Length: 277
Image (tube, rainbow, N blue to C red; front, side, top):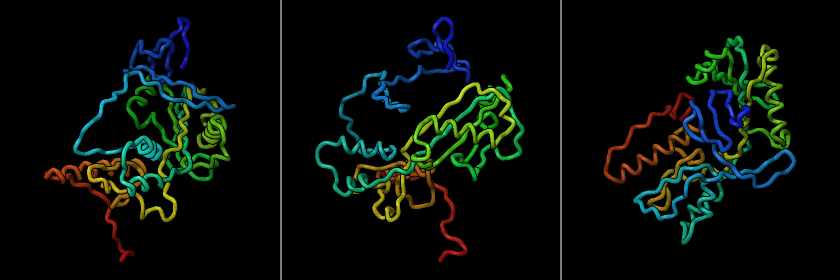
């Protein structure tokens, strides 16, 4: 984001303009920038909390069924806010949910393209942080359009379940990502970085040994409460975002079934094979 002479802010990625309050002055952006409050600062770390731009409704919502669809920290926070009696077994299951090691994603905008003979999403090995690379300027329409206009490229590196002790700061993550990107794509060493972004979160579901038996399923012991998320126990193989989406479909199917309606067919891999009994 670059500040212009008149005080407005220009996004170099897509060309949108914002005023000093983050309100859209010119598209293609359709929404104002989100606002955050700084809770605390510690060396290179900043803790932020989102500022609601609209009034949060406080009325009680009555429904026949409730589907809680959130990550592990979110679902545990919801249960911490519960009033009255909660189902003890369900509450215990939620309390025992674990969170995996953190993940980080860095995205870079460059002023030029580069030759690439591999898949536009490729898994990698042998690097201290990076485990995969994605060429967004070749797979996503808005980035493809931007690359055609500018001749640039947009590259994203992933690091799932990295060790916090080895990369304790945001700067350590970003510096390592950039160094390893130049090792993966040497041609970019001569390019100019137009913009870079880093996302670093710790909310993926953890699956420690012996946790399967007590992992919550879509349907719970609380008759009108259903769960969806990447942490839900599933009846077929899936993980990450596929597990979150599939558990949501199972929750919808369960509601349809209880209402006497036809459930949607969900297709998956065959759980049995030549080497299974």
